[in-house]
Length: 393
Image 1 (cartoon, rainbow, N blue to C red):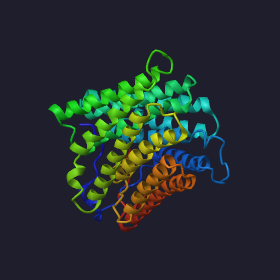
Image 2: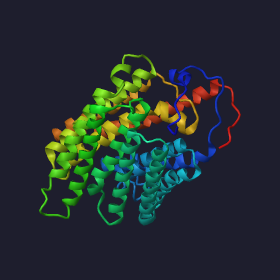
Image 3: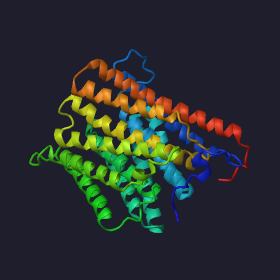
Image 4: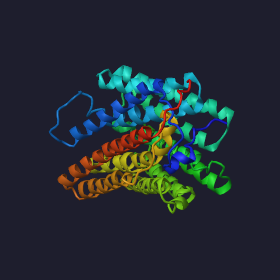
């Protein structure tokens, strides 16, 4: 069976392990390239918010979204999948994505786009190989997400501006995360109505993305039909997750289990908000406020909340280090959601420029706090545990 390496029960509960594993040093350069894209994306976000910070690279603002979605999350997601596959060639996907992000930072747009698109191709192949070994619904959902990444890359190479790629970038992350929930939450064996619900909503979502793209070159097609269909499908996907995800029950269990459940349920709430915005707006570029809300509700509210929730499982699987839960994790989680409400409600809906900036800075501080809290928890756990012999890789 090929699947993501699970977190040992003792580690998930925050208890001390018998030994601490050796770091997989060969994976660290890829992971560090992802962090470089994340830091650059956050810095670019500050520039876009109009803050008086120096420009450290000419692309940090213009490529802010791509660096976050593909340079950072694309690299981390494909690295996790490569670890799960366990075959050396699978690591070409995160290597290409990581190098693509670095190329963008070095102001090499064409190599960056080619490498990022190549990473998507390898990731699709990874899913195909794994699916042949162990056919499962969650793999098909995640493979559809990887195809969304590939389509975004092809359109980008064809000269399409990044705002037109947003639906496909959102599709990559939404479908990948829902597939992860199927896998990690042990609900991948769902049958009957629940499976049909998920498959139907995912298919409608993909059809909406296709229609939204075709509308740019086909004047006869209603220009808002695709975005509205994708928005309605996102509401359906969020409702599916809220009904069938085990987070509904595990939120009653204290410790890391409750923390993860809170992150997941909050993420589904933001996916619902995103779907409503897309459904009502139809045209994501109708105004600056609509564009800002449509993007950040999904990429910050849904995606980053899910990243916070999955980190205690994904980090040990990828880096072979323990990430024990600490109560202060709720701090960056609360800051993320409060700041996002301030940005979308006070800034985008009510037009308060100060609220928009304060909310934007708050979400960035939340991400930095998450990184700092996670690093502190990992280092604390490693200091308290004896060293294990480095396993060959």
